[in-house]
Image (tube, rainbow, N blue to C red; front, side, top):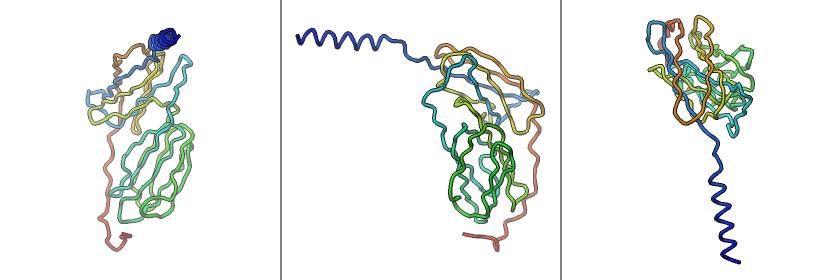
Length: 219
């Protein structure tokens, strides 16, 4: 009996190994300005068109610091349901707020870590400011998909662990001049697909930042 049991066990194991695994694809996206310069801080995100649902993609938490009286990063991307912290790394207090429709919030004058993270459960653009420092401006882009990325200084980003199927790829930038046309693609296999976008982005305006007054230090 034992040899028969062992043969059955090996047969079942072989059948399990022979089953096709869930295919995973990837994309590499490049975002350029009309003149060919790379565009940094562009969000590339994909939504499935063929009805497939992502599995096991819990939203990752994020952190937006206040450092040197600026929001760092200038742009943050999260999935809906993500909890975001706003640690103040400056020696002065900040009063962070947003009036944006996806999430209106206010963190009154504080130093160090804010008491609780804020959960962003609706997709859209959240523009952030500081009531104390008028020039401070930051963006949080909330997407209803786990498949997204943000371009680096070379205008490049990569999105991994995409399930095979049809997708709609879009690009968003906080300073874009026009709506960006979407691209449709079909993923099948492990070879990364290449996406190329050209968008017109306004330059980031310089702002005056007064010297930090030591009398206002909190630490």
